[in-house]
Length: 444
Ligand SMILES: *[C@@H]1O[C@H](CO)[C@@H](O)[C@H](O)[C@H]1NC(C)=O
Ligand SMILES: *[C@@H]1O[C@H](CO)[C@@H](O)[C@H](O)[C@H]1NC(C)=O
Ligand SMILES: *[C@@H]1O[C@H](CO)[C@@H](O)[C@H](O)[C@H]1NC(C)=O
Ligand SMILES: *[C@@H]1O[C@H](CO)[C@@H](O)[C@H](O)[C@H]1NC(C)=O
Image 1: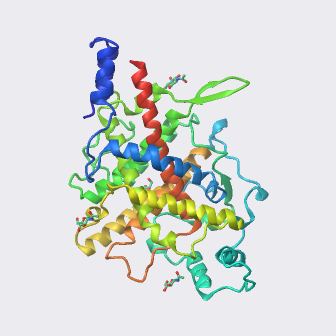
Image 2: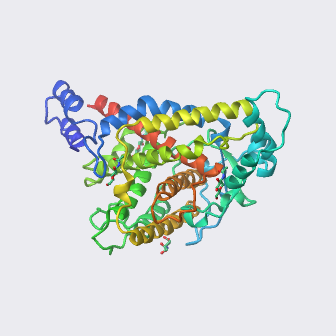
Image 3: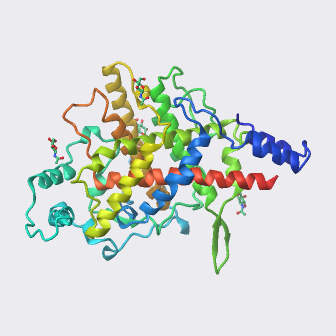
Protein backbone atom coordinates (compact mmCIF):
# COMPACT_ATOMS: atom_id res chain seq x y z
CA UNK A 1 0.00 0.00 0.00
CA UNK A 2 2.96 2.32 -0.18
CA UNK A 3 3.11 2.77 -3.89
CA UNK A 4 2.16 6.38 -4.01
CA UNK A 5 5.64 7.68 -4.32
CA UNK A 6 6.72 4.95 -6.65
CA UNK A 7 3.81 5.63 -8.94
CA UNK A 8 4.36 9.32 -8.80
CA UNK A 9 7.89 8.66 -9.79
CA UNK A 10 6.76 6.60 -12.70
CA UNK A 11 4.42 9.37 -13.64
CA UNK A 12 7.21 11.83 -13.56
CA UNK A 13 9.26 9.58 -15.74
CA UNK A 14 6.39 9.78 -18.19
CA UNK A 15 5.83 6.09 -18.09
CA UNK A 16 2.18 6.64 -17.69
CA UNK A 17 0.13 8.95 -19.80
CA UNK A 18 0.48 12.24 -18.08
CA UNK A 19 -2.29 14.24 -16.52
CA UNK A 20 -5.49 12.26 -16.39
CA UNK A 21 -4.27 8.77 -15.79
CA UNK A 22 -1.76 9.94 -13.33
CA UNK A 23 -4.17 12.09 -11.43
CA UNK A 24 -6.66 9.30 -11.47
CA UNK A 25 -4.20 6.85 -10.00
CA UNK A 26 -3.00 9.35 -7.54
CA UNK A 27 -6.35 10.53 -6.29
CA UNK A 28 -8.25 7.33 -6.19
CA UNK A 29 -5.95 4.45 -5.84
CA UNK A 30 -2.74 5.12 -4.09
CA UNK A 31 -2.76 8.21 -1.99
CA UNK A 32 -2.26 8.79 0.86
CA UNK A 33 1.21 7.35 0.90
CA UNK A 34 0.27 5.53 4.03
CA UNK A 35 -3.08 3.92 4.09
CA UNK A 36 -5.04 1.08 5.49
CA UNK A 37 -4.70 -0.55 8.85
CA UNK A 38 -1.85 0.15 11.17
CA UNK A 39 -0.31 -2.78 12.90
CA UNK A 40 -0.77 -3.00 16.66
CA UNK A 41 -4.00 -1.11 16.21
CA UNK A 42 -7.34 -1.55 14.58
CA UNK A 43 -7.50 1.74 12.90
CA UNK A 44 -6.79 3.15 9.54
CA UNK A 45 -4.91 6.19 8.47
CA UNK A 46 -7.82 7.76 6.65
CA UNK A 47 -10.00 7.92 9.72
CA UNK A 48 -7.15 9.30 11.79
CA UNK A 49 -6.62 12.01 9.17
CA UNK A 50 -10.27 12.95 9.19
CA UNK A 51 -10.54 12.95 12.94
CA UNK A 52 -7.38 14.98 13.39
CA UNK A 53 -7.79 17.51 10.62
CA UNK A 54 -11.42 18.27 11.22
CA UNK A 55 -11.89 17.86 14.94
CA UNK A 56 -8.77 17.69 17.01
CA UNK A 57 -6.45 20.06 15.21
CA UNK A 58 -8.58 23.25 15.48
CA UNK A 59 -9.28 22.65 19.16
CA UNK A 60 -5.66 21.98 19.95
CA UNK A 61 -4.54 25.10 18.12
CA UNK A 62 -6.96 27.26 20.07
CA UNK A 63 -5.72 25.81 23.33
CA UNK A 64 -2.06 26.22 22.45
CA UNK A 65 -2.56 29.95 21.93
CA UNK A 66 -3.49 30.45 25.56
CA UNK A 67 -1.11 31.82 28.16
CA UNK A 68 -1.18 28.61 30.12
CA UNK A 69 0.15 26.50 27.27
CA UNK A 70 2.39 28.92 25.46
CA UNK A 71 4.96 29.45 28.19
CA UNK A 72 7.36 26.58 28.71
CA UNK A 73 10.11 26.61 31.25
CA UNK A 74 13.35 25.19 30.03
CA UNK A 75 17.04 25.23 30.75
CA UNK A 76 18.83 25.51 27.45
CA UNK A 77 22.25 25.92 28.96
CA UNK A 78 22.93 22.53 30.42
CA UNK A 79 26.14 21.00 29.18
CA UNK A 80 26.01 17.85 27.15
CA UNK A 81 26.77 14.95 29.50
CA UNK A 82 28.00 12.54 26.84
CA UNK A 83 30.50 14.30 24.67
CA UNK A 84 31.96 17.73 24.34
CA UNK A 85 29.66 19.45 21.98
CA UNK A 86 31.11 22.02 19.66
CA UNK A 87 30.42 25.68 19.81
CA UNK A 88 26.76 26.41 20.04
CA UNK A 89 25.51 26.67 16.58
CA UNK A 90 25.91 30.16 15.29
CA UNK A 91 23.02 29.90 12.88
CA UNK A 92 20.73 32.86 13.22
CA UNK A 93 17.59 30.81 13.00
CA UNK A 94 18.68 28.66 15.89
CA UNK A 95 18.35 31.38 18.44
CA UNK A 96 15.66 31.19 21.07
CA UNK A 97 14.43 34.35 22.65
CA UNK A 98 13.54 33.78 26.28
CA UNK A 99 10.78 35.83 27.86
CA UNK A 100 11.54 38.72 30.08
CA UNK A 101 9.92 38.16 33.47
CA UNK A 102 7.11 40.64 32.93
CA UNK A 103 5.95 38.83 29.82
CA UNK A 104 5.05 35.71 31.73
CA UNK A 105 1.79 35.91 33.64
CA UNK A 106 2.32 36.44 37.31
CA UNK A 107 0.45 33.30 38.25
CA UNK A 108 2.68 31.02 36.24
CA UNK A 109 5.82 32.46 37.74
CA UNK A 110 4.91 32.51 41.37
CA UNK A 111 5.49 29.65 43.68
CA UNK A 112 2.79 27.18 44.51
CA UNK A 113 2.31 28.72 47.92
CA UNK A 114 1.21 31.98 46.41
CA UNK A 115 -1.12 30.19 44.10
CA UNK A 116 -3.21 28.99 46.94
CA UNK A 117 -5.50 31.97 47.46
CA UNK A 118 -5.90 32.57 43.76
CA UNK A 119 -6.79 28.99 43.15
CA UNK A 120 -9.45 29.24 45.71
CA UNK A 121 -10.94 32.26 44.01
CA UNK A 122 -11.53 30.33 40.86
CA UNK A 123 -13.07 27.52 42.78
CA UNK A 124 -15.38 29.88 44.58
CA UNK A 125 -16.23 32.09 41.66
CA UNK A 126 -19.47 30.25 41.24
CA UNK A 127 -20.48 30.76 44.84
CA UNK A 128 -20.79 34.49 44.46
CA UNK A 129 -20.33 36.56 47.51
CA UNK A 130 -18.30 34.03 49.36
CA UNK A 131 -16.00 36.01 51.59
CA UNK A 132 -14.27 33.13 53.17
CA UNK A 133 -10.98 32.94 51.34
CA UNK A 134 -9.47 30.34 53.58
CA UNK A 135 -8.71 27.11 51.87
CA UNK A 136 -10.84 24.09 51.99
CA UNK A 137 -8.92 21.08 53.24
CA UNK A 138 -9.53 19.43 49.95
CA UNK A 139 -7.93 22.24 47.98
CA UNK A 140 -4.99 22.33 50.32
CA UNK A 141 -4.56 18.61 49.89
CA UNK A 142 -4.86 18.82 46.13
CA UNK A 143 -2.31 21.56 45.96
CA UNK A 144 0.05 19.52 47.99
CA UNK A 145 -0.46 16.65 45.63
CA UNK A 146 0.01 18.90 42.69
CA UNK A 147 3.39 20.14 43.73
CA UNK A 148 4.59 16.95 45.31
CA UNK A 149 7.58 15.48 43.63
CA UNK A 150 7.91 12.12 45.13
CA UNK A 151 6.96 10.29 42.00
CA UNK A 152 10.57 10.11 40.89
CA UNK A 153 10.29 6.45 40.04
CA UNK A 154 7.32 7.01 37.77
CA UNK A 155 8.91 9.68 35.72
CA UNK A 156 10.20 9.28 32.20
CA UNK A 157 11.98 12.56 31.82
CA UNK A 158 14.25 14.72 33.79
CA UNK A 159 12.23 17.50 35.25
CA UNK A 160 15.08 19.35 36.82
CA UNK A 161 14.68 22.09 34.27
CA UNK A 162 11.62 23.19 36.05
CA UNK A 163 13.38 23.85 39.31
CA UNK A 164 16.74 24.89 38.03
CA UNK A 165 17.59 28.54 38.61
CA UNK A 166 19.07 28.74 35.11
CA UNK A 167 15.76 27.87 33.53
CA UNK A 168 13.87 30.48 31.66
CA UNK A 169 10.40 30.77 30.28
CA UNK A 170 10.11 30.63 26.54
CA UNK A 171 7.11 31.76 24.58
CA UNK A 172 6.53 28.88 22.21
CA UNK A 173 4.43 30.96 19.85
CA UNK A 174 7.32 33.35 19.29
CA UNK A 175 9.85 30.58 18.75
CA UNK A 176 8.17 28.26 16.28
CA UNK A 177 9.67 24.97 15.26
CA UNK A 178 10.90 25.32 11.71
CA UNK A 179 13.86 24.83 9.46
CA UNK A 180 16.99 26.21 11.04
CA UNK A 181 19.76 24.96 8.82
CA UNK A 182 20.90 22.68 11.62
CA UNK A 183 21.88 19.49 9.89
CA UNK A 184 24.92 17.60 8.85
CA UNK A 185 27.21 15.60 11.12
CA UNK A 186 26.16 17.17 14.43
CA UNK A 187 22.48 16.51 13.86
CA UNK A 188 23.23 12.98 12.68
CA UNK A 189 25.23 12.35 15.79
CA UNK A 190 22.22 13.13 17.94
CA UNK A 191 19.85 10.87 16.07
CA UNK A 192 22.45 8.15 15.76
CA UNK A 193 23.07 8.00 19.46
CA UNK A 194 19.37 8.04 20.14
CA UNK A 195 18.68 5.18 17.79
CA UNK A 196 21.73 3.07 18.17
CA UNK A 197 22.40 3.33 21.84
CA UNK A 198 19.08 3.98 23.43
CA UNK A 199 16.39 2.73 21.27
CA UNK A 200 16.17 -1.05 21.08
CA UNK A 201 16.39 -0.64 17.39
CA UNK A 202 15.21 -3.64 15.43
CA UNK A 203 18.00 -5.26 13.53
CA UNK A 204 15.94 -5.32 10.39
CA UNK A 205 15.58 -1.59 10.07
CA UNK A 206 17.73 -0.32 7.29
CA UNK A 207 20.23 2.23 8.24
CA UNK A 208 20.62 4.90 5.68
CA UNK A 209 20.52 7.01 8.81
CA UNK A 210 24.13 7.75 9.13
CA UNK A 211 27.48 6.42 8.08
CA UNK A 212 28.48 6.30 11.72
CA UNK A 213 26.40 3.38 12.76
CA UNK A 214 27.62 0.29 14.43
CA UNK A 215 25.32 -2.67 14.32
CA UNK A 216 24.78 -5.51 16.67
CA UNK A 217 21.35 -5.56 18.23
CA UNK A 218 19.50 -8.72 18.89
CA UNK A 219 16.71 -9.50 16.54
CA UNK A 220 14.02 -11.05 18.64
CA UNK A 221 12.24 -8.15 20.16
CA UNK A 222 9.14 -8.04 22.21
CA UNK A 223 6.36 -5.87 20.97
CA UNK A 224 7.02 -3.26 23.64
CA UNK A 225 10.59 -2.57 22.67
CA UNK A 226 9.61 -2.46 19.07
CA UNK A 227 6.95 0.02 20.09
CA UNK A 228 9.54 2.16 21.81
CA UNK A 229 11.61 2.29 18.68
CA UNK A 230 8.56 3.23 16.67
CA UNK A 231 7.73 6.09 19.00
CA UNK A 232 11.16 7.59 18.59
CA UNK A 233 11.00 7.09 14.85
CA UNK A 234 7.58 8.78 14.83
CA UNK A 235 9.03 11.72 16.71
CA UNK A 236 11.84 11.96 14.22
CA UNK A 237 9.33 11.83 11.34
CA UNK A 238 7.24 14.54 12.89
CA UNK A 239 10.19 16.84 13.36
CA UNK A 240 11.27 16.19 9.77
CA UNK A 241 7.81 17.09 8.49
CA UNK A 242 7.84 20.38 10.35
CA UNK A 243 11.23 21.25 8.99
CA UNK A 244 10.11 20.45 5.45
CA UNK A 245 6.83 22.30 5.87
CA UNK A 246 8.43 25.42 7.27
CA UNK A 247 11.51 25.50 5.17
CA UNK A 248 13.38 28.74 4.64
CA UNK A 249 12.47 29.25 1.01
CA UNK A 250 13.98 32.63 0.46
CA UNK A 251 16.10 34.88 2.56
CA UNK A 252 16.06 38.34 1.07
CA UNK A 253 17.25 41.29 3.04
CA UNK A 254 13.74 42.63 3.39
CA UNK A 255 11.92 39.42 4.15
CA UNK A 256 12.22 35.78 4.89
CA UNK A 257 9.74 33.38 3.45
CA UNK A 258 9.02 30.04 5.09
CA UNK A 259 7.00 27.38 3.39
CA UNK A 260 6.76 23.78 2.24
CA UNK A 261 9.68 22.28 0.37
CA UNK A 262 8.49 19.24 -1.49
CA UNK A 263 11.92 17.97 -2.44
CA UNK A 264 13.07 18.12 1.17
CA UNK A 265 9.95 16.19 2.13
CA UNK A 266 10.60 13.60 -0.53
CA UNK A 267 14.20 13.15 0.45
CA UNK A 268 12.98 12.06 3.86
CA UNK A 269 9.86 10.10 3.02
CA UNK A 270 9.89 8.96 -0.57
CA UNK A 271 9.95 5.20 -0.63
CA UNK A 272 12.51 5.10 -3.41
CA UNK A 273 14.82 7.70 -2.00
CA UNK A 274 14.84 6.14 1.46
CA UNK A 275 15.09 2.47 0.54
CA UNK A 276 11.56 1.86 1.66
CA UNK A 277 11.98 3.44 5.08
CA UNK A 278 9.98 6.60 4.37
CA UNK A 279 6.49 5.09 4.48
CA UNK A 280 7.42 3.19 7.64
CA UNK A 281 8.47 6.44 9.23
CA UNK A 282 5.10 7.91 8.39
CA UNK A 283 3.35 4.94 9.92
CA UNK A 284 5.37 5.43 13.04
CA UNK A 285 4.14 8.99 13.15
CA UNK A 286 0.56 7.75 13.22
CA UNK A 287 1.48 5.25 15.86
CA UNK A 288 2.93 8.02 18.01
CA UNK A 289 -0.21 10.05 17.48
CA UNK A 290 -2.36 7.21 18.75
CA UNK A 291 -0.20 6.70 21.81
CA UNK A 292 -0.29 10.35 22.77
CA UNK A 293 -3.99 10.55 22.04
CA UNK A 294 -4.55 7.60 24.31
CA UNK A 295 -2.54 9.27 27.06
CA UNK A 296 -4.67 12.39 26.73
CA UNK A 297 -7.79 10.34 27.27
CA UNK A 298 -6.23 8.65 30.27
CA UNK A 299 -5.46 12.05 31.76
CA UNK A 300 -9.13 12.93 31.73
CA UNK A 301 -9.89 11.77 35.29
CA UNK A 302 -7.01 13.84 36.66
CA UNK A 303 -8.01 16.97 34.76
CA UNK A 304 -11.68 16.54 35.57
CA UNK A 305 -11.14 16.92 39.28
CA UNK A 306 -12.44 20.19 40.60
CA UNK A 307 -9.13 20.94 42.21
CA UNK A 308 -7.21 20.73 38.95
CA UNK A 309 -6.71 24.24 37.69
CA UNK A 310 -4.96 25.74 34.73
CA UNK A 311 -3.62 28.48 36.88
CA UNK A 312 -2.28 31.71 35.42
CA UNK A 313 -3.78 34.16 37.84
CA UNK A 314 -6.61 35.30 35.57
CA UNK A 315 -9.56 33.45 37.08
CA UNK A 316 -12.03 33.81 34.24
CA UNK A 317 -9.50 32.92 31.61
CA UNK A 318 -8.33 29.98 33.72
CA UNK A 319 -11.80 28.58 34.08
CA UNK A 320 -12.46 28.97 30.38
CA UNK A 321 -9.21 27.24 29.52
CA UNK A 322 -10.09 24.35 31.71
CA UNK A 323 -13.37 23.99 29.87
CA UNK A 324 -11.50 24.06 26.59
CA UNK A 325 -9.08 21.43 27.78
CA UNK A 326 -11.91 19.21 28.98
CA UNK A 327 -13.63 19.67 25.65
CA UNK A 328 -10.42 18.61 23.92
CA UNK A 329 -10.07 15.53 26.09
CA UNK A 330 -13.68 14.56 25.48
CA UNK A 331 -13.10 14.94 21.77
CA UNK A 332 -10.05 12.73 22.08
CA UNK A 333 -12.14 10.19 23.93
CA UNK A 334 -14.75 10.22 21.21
CA UNK A 335 -12.27 8.82 18.70
CA UNK A 336 -13.62 5.34 18.15
CA UNK A 337 -10.44 3.55 17.15
CA UNK A 338 -8.26 3.89 20.14
CA UNK A 339 -5.08 2.07 20.52
CA UNK A 340 -5.50 -0.64 23.12
CA UNK A 341 -2.50 -0.22 25.36
CA UNK A 342 -3.15 -3.45 27.22
CA UNK A 343 -1.73 -5.25 24.23
CA UNK A 344 1.37 -3.15 24.52
CA UNK A 345 2.21 -3.76 28.13
CA UNK A 346 0.69 -7.18 28.54
CA UNK A 347 2.38 -10.19 29.94
CA UNK A 348 3.93 -11.32 33.15
CA UNK A 349 3.92 -8.72 35.91
CA UNK A 350 7.57 -8.90 36.84
CA UNK A 351 8.47 -8.81 33.20
CA UNK A 352 6.27 -5.79 32.69
CA UNK A 353 7.92 -4.03 35.61
CA UNK A 354 11.35 -4.81 34.25
CA UNK A 355 10.33 -3.59 30.86
CA UNK A 356 8.93 -0.42 32.26
CA UNK A 357 12.22 0.23 34.01
CA UNK A 358 14.21 -0.44 30.82
CA UNK A 359 12.08 1.88 28.81
CA UNK A 360 12.15 4.49 31.50
CA UNK A 361 15.94 4.50 31.73
CA UNK A 362 16.37 4.60 27.98
CA UNK A 363 13.94 7.44 27.83
CA UNK A 364 15.68 9.38 30.58
CA UNK A 365 18.83 9.03 28.61
CA UNK A 366 17.16 10.39 25.52
CA UNK A 367 16.03 13.42 27.41
CA UNK A 368 19.66 13.94 28.47
CA UNK A 369 20.85 13.62 24.90
CA UNK A 370 18.65 16.61 24.11
CA UNK A 371 21.17 18.71 26.00
CA UNK A 372 23.66 17.82 23.30
CA UNK A 373 21.62 19.36 20.50
CA UNK A 374 23.66 22.35 19.51
CA UNK A 375 20.97 24.39 17.88
CA UNK A 376 18.96 26.03 20.65
CA UNK A 377 15.74 26.14 18.69
CA UNK A 378 15.99 22.43 17.99
CA UNK A 379 16.98 21.78 21.57
CA UNK A 380 13.92 23.61 22.83
CA UNK A 381 11.50 21.66 20.67
CA UNK A 382 13.37 18.42 21.17
CA UNK A 383 13.14 18.78 24.92
CA UNK A 384 9.52 19.75 24.81
CA UNK A 385 8.53 16.83 22.62
CA UNK A 386 10.53 14.24 24.52
CA UNK A 387 9.05 15.49 27.73
CA UNK A 388 5.60 15.31 26.19
CA UNK A 389 6.13 11.75 25.06
CA UNK A 390 7.67 10.92 28.43
CA UNK A 391 4.55 12.23 30.10
CA UNK A 392 2.38 10.15 27.80
CA UNK A 393 4.35 7.03 28.75
CA UNK A 394 4.15 7.91 32.40
CA UNK A 395 0.38 8.15 32.10
CA UNK A 396 0.01 4.89 30.22
CA UNK A 397 2.43 3.00 32.43
CA UNK A 398 0.78 4.33 35.57
CA UNK A 399 -2.01 1.86 35.01
CA UNK A 400 0.15 -1.20 34.93
CA UNK A 401 -0.76 -3.69 37.62
CA UNK A 402 2.90 -3.63 38.59
CA UNK A 403 2.84 0.04 39.47
CA UNK A 404 2.77 0.67 43.19
CA UNK A 405 -0.92 0.79 44.13
CA UNK A 406 -0.51 3.95 46.18
CA UNK A 407 0.80 5.95 43.27
CA UNK A 408 -2.08 7.90 41.92
CA UNK A 409 -1.38 9.63 38.68
CA UNK A 410 -0.43 13.27 39.12
CA UNK A 411 0.56 15.79 36.51
CA UNK A 412 2.24 19.09 37.09
CA UNK A 413 1.99 22.12 34.87
CA UNK A 414 5.25 21.45 33.08
CA UNK A 415 4.17 17.92 32.16
CA UNK A 416 0.74 18.96 31.01
CA UNK A 417 2.12 21.80 28.90
CA UNK A 418 4.64 19.44 27.33
CA UNK A 419 2.06 16.75 26.64
CA UNK A 420 -0.47 19.06 25.02
CA UNK A 421 2.19 20.82 22.97
CA UNK A 422 3.69 17.49 21.93
CA UNK A 423 0.41 16.20 20.63
CA UNK A 424 -0.11 19.60 19.06
CA UNK A 425 3.07 19.02 17.07
CA UNK A 426 2.01 15.55 15.92
CA UNK A 427 -1.42 16.80 15.03
CA UNK A 428 0.16 19.59 13.00
CA UNK A 429 2.35 17.04 11.23
CA UNK A 430 -0.66 15.01 10.19
CA UNK A 431 -2.31 18.14 8.90
CA UNK A 432 0.85 19.11 7.02
CA UNK A 433 1.06 15.65 5.49
CA UNK A 434 -2.28 16.35 3.89
CA UNK A 435 -0.86 19.49 2.39
CA UNK A 436 2.17 17.65 1.06
CA UNK A 437 -0.06 15.06 -0.55
CA UNK A 438 -1.85 17.82 -2.38
CA UNK A 439 1.39 19.46 -3.44
CA UNK A 440 2.70 16.16 -4.72
CA UNK A 441 -0.51 15.66 -6.66
CA UNK A 442 -0.09 19.09 -8.27
CA UNK A 443 3.45 18.24 -9.20
CA UNK A 444 2.37 15.48 -11.51
C1 LIG B 1 -3.84 13.44 47.49
O1 LIG B 1 -3.07 12.26 47.44
C2 LIG B 1 -3.43 11.29 48.41
C3 LIG B 1 -2.51 10.10 48.28
O2 LIG B 1 -1.28 10.46 47.79
C4 LIG B 1 -4.89 10.89 48.22
O3 LIG B 1 -5.28 9.96 49.25
C5 LIG B 1 -5.80 12.09 48.27
O4 LIG B 1 -7.13 11.74 47.95
C6 LIG B 1 -5.33 13.14 47.27
N1 LIG B 1 -6.16 14.32 47.42
C7 LIG B 1 -6.73 14.97 46.42
C8 LIG B 1 -7.63 16.09 46.76
O5 LIG B 1 -6.50 14.71 45.25
C1 LIG C 1 22.96 6.81 27.31
O1 LIG C 1 23.33 7.44 26.10
C2 LIG C 1 24.74 7.50 25.89
C3 LIG C 1 24.99 8.35 24.68
O2 LIG C 1 24.31 7.92 23.56
C4 LIG C 1 25.27 6.07 25.76
O3 LIG C 1 26.66 6.12 25.58
C5 LIG C 1 24.91 5.28 27.01
O4 LIG C 1 25.28 3.94 26.84
C6 LIG C 1 23.40 5.35 27.30
N1 LIG C 1 23.13 4.72 28.58
C7 LIG C 1 22.07 3.94 28.80
C8 LIG C 1 21.90 3.43 30.18
O5 LIG C 1 21.28 3.67 27.91
C1 LIG D 1 14.40 22.46 -0.97
O1 LIG D 1 15.25 21.54 -0.31
C2 LIG D 1 16.35 21.11 -1.07
C3 LIG D 1 17.09 20.08 -0.23
O2 LIG D 1 16.29 18.98 0.04
C4 LIG D 1 17.22 22.28 -1.47
O3 LIG D 1 18.29 21.84 -2.27
C5 LIG D 1 16.37 23.29 -2.23
O4 LIG D 1 17.13 24.43 -2.51
C6 LIG D 1 15.16 23.68 -1.41
N1 LIG D 1 14.30 24.53 -2.22
C7 LIG D 1 14.05 25.79 -1.88
C8 LIG D 1 13.09 26.51 -2.78
O5 LIG D 1 14.54 26.33 -0.93
C1 LIG E 1 -7.94 -4.31 25.23
O1 LIG E 1 -7.35 -5.59 25.17
C2 LIG E 1 -7.60 -6.37 26.30
C3 LIG E 1 -6.84 -7.69 26.17
O2 LIG E 1 -5.96 -7.70 25.13
C4 LIG E 1 -9.10 -6.63 26.44
O3 LIG E 1 -9.37 -7.39 27.60
C5 LIG E 1 -9.82 -5.28 26.53
O4 LIG E 1 -11.21 -5.48 26.56
C6 LIG E 1 -9.45 -4.40 25.34
N1 LIG E 1 -10.04 -3.09 25.53
C7 LIG E 1 -10.72 -2.46 24.59
C8 LIG E 1 -11.27 -1.13 24.97
O5 LIG E 1 -10.91 -2.94 23.50
